[in-house]
Length: 187
Image 1 (tube, rainbow, N blue to C red):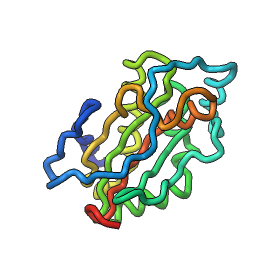
Image 2: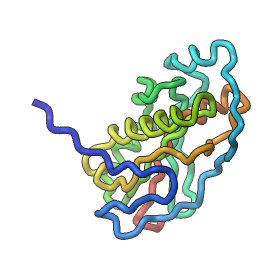
Image 3: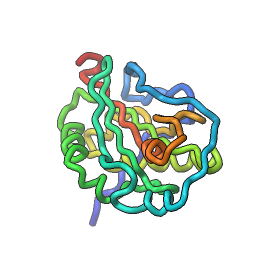
């Protein structure tokens, strides 16, 4: 028999993050560059179909942004259009595998997981996609790392990693960012 699944951290709507009971204070990151825009762009021919292939639109599905203040950012991008699940190629990515081991073994790390979408489609559906993507990345974490996640949430309305003007940027926006707080506030 399998073990019972661990519950997800409490969902918090966009806005201030509610503190989880096991966190004394919420760490602060130097913010990752983002775009705020209500502009909506339509998909081009074959964009949706290509997004749902293992290769997708981007050459790399997992990236680690170097430290910014007390944080690092692990970004998993190029989710398929309207997909909340990770592609197999992303799950097998060596960088992701190495980071998940690091997350499980380095007890000084704390995490916030934020889901993103592109601007196409209704905002209500985008919140559903953003939340689902963040939750599916949370499920990749081991039990120790899960206990140190203080928030799993969608990005705020009209907040993106890049503008939505190109196919590549929309693919980059269909993402999850794991904010990694190192050493409880110091690198």
